[in-house]
Image (cartoon, rainbow, N blue to C red; front, side, top):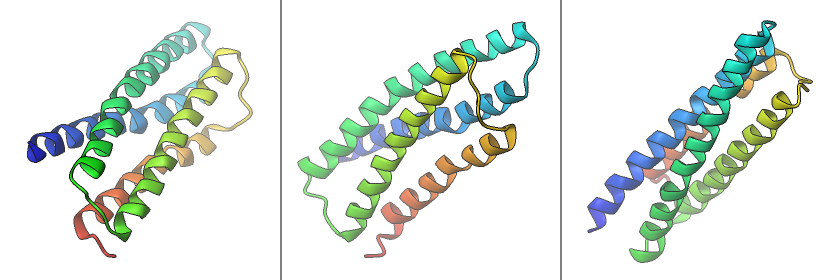
Length: 137
């Protein structure tokens, strides 16, 4: 059973992160877009992607909790990973706040800022994968 839960956890994590990789890219496009019709289309895409990513995050987190608590996984690496998971959840919610601002027509950031913001989930995923695979401490 452990390997099935682990496999599903990996699939949901990868799917969730796919949304986190693309959603900020839509923010880059929204920050640059001047055509109202194109802006509305991008907003619709961002809304749907945010909701779908949120749905994917729930089983990812629940399956991870099941692995942790159900199978007694422990170690210093796990504490660091859990911190990064909480940061990932916070990042996802921050994306939701940014999306709401775009929906209200408020954007206080440049497209360059969103390009840098877009790199955050890459760093988070890289660190999480290294912690889980290498278990450095």
